[in-house]
Length: 626
View 1 (spheres, rainbow, N blue to C red):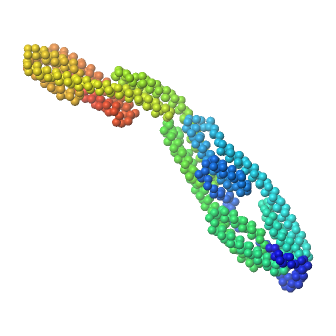
View 2: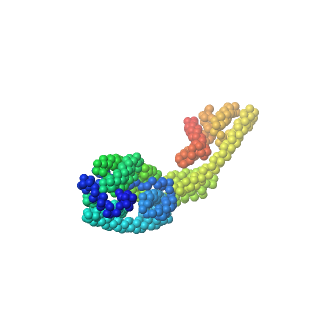
View 3: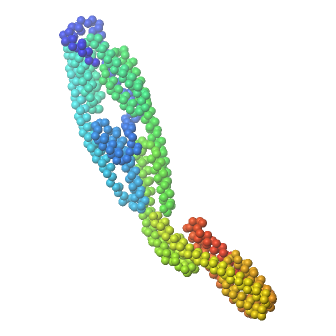
């Protein structure tokens, strides 16, 4: 510490010499002989292998929800601030920006590949925000280079200045006759040495030791009064006690990296402060060292914990690499299969994003390994899509041709022929492979619309058939009523009238299925009654009520054979219709929603055909057994 101003101003060099010369021999000897040393308070280092040179954590900026343009604006603000204040902020903004950019590029490439493109042809779109950011980074880089050069030049100048101060102190120490007059000057030189600023790191320790040796040499030869020295010790004690308190307060810091950096600054200040009274030095240094040890231990524990977490992350990332490497593409033959495996790959990528960093070296290697598997998968997927492109185009052309054929036929009234053609087209549709997804629904709806239109028209025709069947029922009821009246009147021409009515009955077509048996039973009973009542046994037909009662005549046999041929033809026709409807049902149930009115109508029609076929089989069997 410098001498108090009042005492400095009240003494000239001569007065100082007189005071020192009149001090008692013992006191003077104590000042001269006492070993005064400047402690070398180097910051205690953490235990062996502690990562003390780790970079401090990035500043806690709110970047999570920032867009790229907002990050560029933040970088522009950094470019306007002093370069020495924004190093960590610049790195944090840069990392956040390129993280967003990488996600955009990954999505852009995925969409590019999903459209069937070759990954080797992928070229990212130009990003104005990225260009702006790079320009700002170049500006900051140039400013940082200029700043570092200026700082290095300044440190070299500081080193030269400190060496000049050391040379002056040594020069003063070499003149013991006038050393007492130079006390204030030496104190000022000590202050100048402290204020000179940083020097190159390679010279820092050596120049400080030279300063220590020069200072110790000065104190060794200094003959100054004890009061002045005690005052200097007292001020140094106060400063070092304050440093102890600040070091102890660091124990409450939550950011251990920040606390460790502050501790290094406290150690630098400790070195700059002069000695204290000899009896207090060891105790004071022990206190400061204990506070430093507590921070160093926390610092070491912090990096050990981080190392452990990094190992956990490395193990988890290795497991993800193994999972993605086990996924095989050899059996992927359809779009659905590729899409399913793509979902698995994307899920693994999401799991990767949730994991923290591994060690710097391991993290880079693991990411390269994981990225390689992802790139290989999506490359093979692109090749598959490319190979399928021509086939999909061909399939689309075939399906469009079927649509055109179906649309050309959908208004046909040739029900049997058109139905067969529609069934064949539906079978052909099933044999054609898939088409591009964006055309799939449209071409299918176009084809099924033509099919539905045709079968709806056919259904309406069947409704008309039902109306005809009801008219036939009415006509057959009229025949039955006329038969009853003819039998009751029993006129001379009644037999001929009965035969005419039988011919009329055969001419009338089908009646509703649920009325068929009832109306036929009534008709058969009346015919049997007519043959018995009107003595018509000899000409009774075989097909009018099972086996005739009485002998057979050739006329009856001819009519029976004619009726059997008609029944056989009808039977074959119904069997053909049944086969057509069943084939058609197989197609419709696979491609039409359940409950569709057309499906329900076809089901009813199939059931009715089966009943008719069973009835025809029975009638043919009766004729054959008669």
